[in-house]
Length: 225
Ligand code: GRF
Image (cartoon, rainbow, N blue to C red; front, top):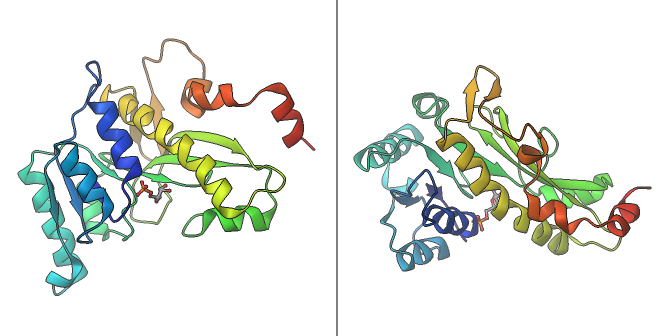
């Protein structure tokens, strides 16, 4: 897993993977920034971690090559970016094609890039959310694995909206990782192909149950103009 900061999504994945029936284990956490909160959390949860700093390498390619080597030294099979705030170079991304995922705090393809919550409020959207997608060389552009929607409420500021989306992120990312680790979601060209999802409900991919349960009828009425 790659992080740059707070590591709350990282913690959600570590906690999910600690459950007995989870089909993946977290091998290592790498941070491009020393001293971040996520590193302390990883250590407290007993996950090996390491800092691979950009400043220690002459070029971006050399930095990415070091990250790639560190991941391989831990026999990593799937890389989860969890608040990793750097674009990886295309050769590095290509090596992990179909085996690298990211979580983005918006309903892609809307609001790629930074400041998604501020931009969602400015745009006046009534529904916002988060997306787990496979990573491709273009930023926030890869095939979508799963999304969770949250309402934008009257009176929301950036912090309130960010907190609502983050709660959904913590539910969505483990669910998406599970789908991929179980072989039920895989990247096939520019799309994600699903298989073996027995309930047949696309809702199981588009929104985890706890988020859906948060939306009672009164709530929905308030977000539907
Ligand atoms: C999350 O909102 C994630 O979607 C985005 O960066 C933020 C990281 O937060 N890519 P955290 O480090 O997981 O708490």
